[in-house]
Image 1 (cartoon, rainbow, N blue to C red):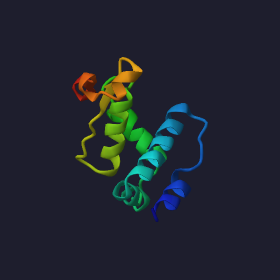
Image 2 (image 1 turned 120 degrees about the horizontal axis):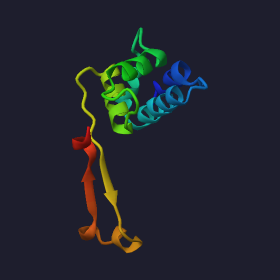
Image 3 (image 1 turned 30 degrees about the vertical axis):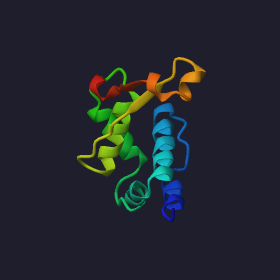
Length: 113
């Protein structure tokens, strides 16, 4: 990914602020996973970590806390207005269920937000 180094330079410095550092870490993680997202973040003139964190804090539904999913949705929206984020979780009740997928519990957390 050619843009990843640009993103790391732009968002790579820790702030000493737990929330901002968690957002910074996730931006870099998402950029490693998706080249289009990475390119958009790298080429987003006028957008930076402080702006992303401010956008998340301003638009969160509850001023006292925020779920990871809501933070990811707001972060994606900062770079891609109108973007949606879905989260699916798979729970294996025991180790053997990993091999037998028919007994798996799949949960969609998007309805919680």
